[in-house]
Length: 405
Ligand SMILES: Cc1ncc(COP(=O)(O)O)c(C=O)c1O
Image 1 (cartoon, protein in one colour):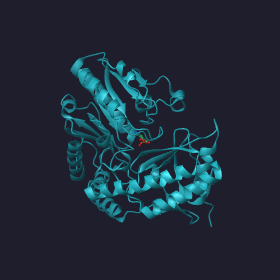
Image 2 (cartoon, rainbow, N blue to C red):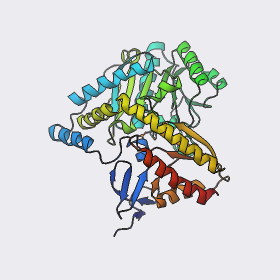
Image 3 (spheres, protein in one colour):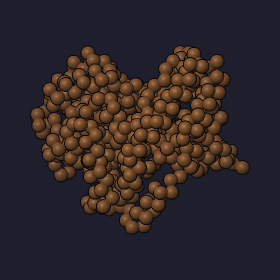
Image 4 (tube, helix red, strand yellow):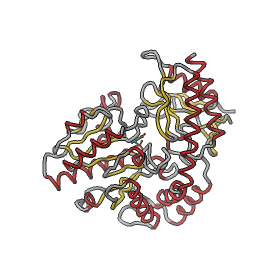
């Protein structure tokens, strides 16, 4: 039987040098190539919201691939048209200006690059030169391409790549006073209503209210990056809905096409009206296969019963995590919303305990994520059962006891 791990594969050194080699998945479970089974609370970093091994999604992809796989952006297809219309209509949930159009891309970072371009072109054509600045927040993660990376103020990600995009600033997340810097020189503010990679902090209602007030005053566009926290992960379609944020633009990706690469940048009419042919484009974004699968994903996620179930399961999960915190003094806080949760741990300065916990959990058959420096991130599929949530928490308790007793 093959070893579960591979060491030093021919992948660039910007990745780890050892990997667990996974072979198949079903629901909340994955199997490695040696046959060992794992409960997957990582969901491919919050991508596999509907679980693994979905025959319904595979069938849609297969049928569409046989019919038509790619057409480029010189043409369009029924699946892309239908998906765009349905995504535009989701704007009603936010209670702000309706969305008018969707730009499709292939990844989260591309969705944010599109948003950077749309907000800058909007500022330029409505207000002229000198209104191009962008603001993001401490703890944010918006992607790895240079524009999105410039909005991601984590030193280790940015440091080797200076000079980054000019005119990008960082303010302190949830700090009301720090919003006072916003004036007419800014084109847009980018934020995750619930931060994923940064450590599961969410915006406060006061912060959302003040941000909106200042941005409306100067016509600065608010871009909600819902790439990780959107599409039902927190129990509402958009996390912004329950956090009092009314964005102008929303970016979506991760679970949109059930594990295939697809992103969406949702823009309002006032932005769409000033965009010219050729301002932006993509070869693969919004192809017929990914958009057909995404249509099926939306059929499932947009069902009220589905979102109500996510909320119910999230309540159960919260109880389990609170119990875990009560029994382990090293768990400082239970964070996050819905089925995107974090356990903030008290760890000795500079310790590698978080990595040890992840690797011990893997050994026990539980896949977890990290967020920031001291938070364990849990993102089970939205289709997880309460039994699986209990199983995961029991394994987690064992691993925490071993490492943090
Ligand atoms: C909130 C958020 N924005 C953007 C991205 C970038 O997405 P991608 O890795 O698909 O480019 C991520 C990825 O983790 C994310 O969590």
